[in-house]
Image 1 (cartoon, rainbow, N blue to C red):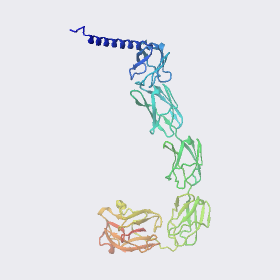
Image 2 (cartoon, helix red, strand yellow):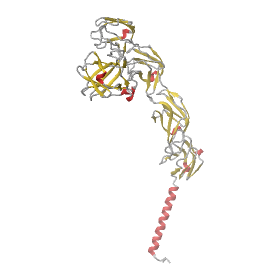
Image 3 (cartoon, one colour):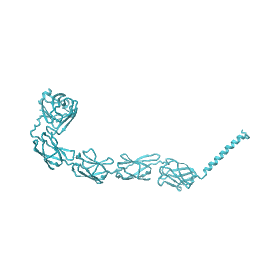
Length: 522
C-alpha cells in the first residue's frame, strides 16, 4: 500500500505526468501544424499501372505528383484516394527511375530516395538497313529505360540521339557490323533483350574495274556503290593494304596499282573490318614471249625476242650473266638485245617496269658451242623427281640446309634444276629414297650421272655422293659453270640395288650453294 502522505514520492509522480502531458501536446501540435510531410512511399519495384502509396502528414494539401520522366505527371484529379495521411495513385506509363516530387501550395516536397520500378523493355521493330554514321529508329515499349545498346562487333553506344517511351533513335557506329542488337535496360531487375530482326550495316560494293587489264603503278578506277565507306583496298599478291587513294567518292575510287599486284580479286575493307570483293579478277598487263631467234645464239650476237607487251620490259636476265638493262631496240612486239658473254643455256627472265614481277621464256635459249646435256637412260631427276623414283615421301627428307626442286636458273637440261643451300652439320638437304628399302635393280646399268653448278663462293668446296647410306664419292665444286660427272657404279656400291642417294656437304662448315641437274643412270 502506497503512503499517499509521502510528499517526495507524490511530487515525483506529478512531475512524470506533467512531462507526458507536455510531450502529447507537442505531438498533436506537429501533426496539426499544417506542414505537409512525406514519410514513405512504395512499394519499390512496382510496375507501370500499379497502385503506389504515399504516407505522411497533411497530404491533403498535395495538388500534383511528378515522377521522373517526360510527361510522367499525376494531377490531383487522378488520385485514387487522398487523405491527410495517405495518397494512392496509379504509376504513369512515362514514369522512370528517379526522385518523386509532391506539389503543394507551400512548395515542393522531393523524396529522399529514388523511385525504381520493375520494367521489361521490348522491341517491336528496328530500321532494317543503315550506313555507318546514320541514325536508326528502334520502336517498342519502355525504351526510355534503355541504358546502352551493343551492335555486332561489340560496339557499345550509351548516348542516344533521342529517347522516349516507345522510340529510341541512335547513331550507327562507324565500325559496326551487320547483326542483331543487344539492348540493356535498367530497373529493379535490369536485363538485356536481343532484337529478333537484324540490322544490316551498308558496305561498299564493287561493280566495275577499269582499265582491265591494267599496268602496274598506273591508276585503276573502281566503280560501285557506297565506296566512300571503304577505308582500304586489297590487291591480290600484295600484303599491305592500300589506304591512300587518288580520289574517292560514293560511286568511284581511283587508286594506283601496287608494284607487286598479281591477277586476282580486288577487295574493299570497311571501318568494321568487313571485306567485300570484286566479282571479276583484275588482270595485270605483263609481257609474253612467243619466239626467240636465233636459237641457238652466239654469245655477243643480237637476239630477237618477239611477243606482246614487250614495251613493259625493264631488263632481261640471261643464265650466268649480269642483268641487261640496255637494248638495241624495243617495241610492244619486239626486243632486240645483245647476248652477254659467259651465258649458259636456260630460260630468260624478263623484269617488268614499275613492278616486282617477272616472267620467264617458255623455251630454253640454247648457246652455240656449249656442251649438250648428258644422255641419261634412267633419269632420277629431270625437272622433277621422276616416276622411276617412286617413293616421293623421301623427297621431303634431308637436313643441314634447304633445297628447291623447282629452281629455274641455272639449268643443265629441261627447265628446272635443284638448288641446294648448305648450312652446316655435314648436311644433305637433297635426300632421295626408293620404296623404303626395296630399292631399284641397277644391275643393268654401269654409270651414275650428275651435273653440278657451283654458285659464287663455292669454288673448291666439296660434296660427297652418298649411296645406300654410305659416303661413296667426293666431288670438288667448280664455280660458275656446269660440270658433268660420270661415275662408275662399281666405285659407288657393290650392291645390285639402289635405295638411297645423298648429295652431302663434305666438311660440315656449310655456307655455300650448288645446283644439281641431269641426275640418273646409264
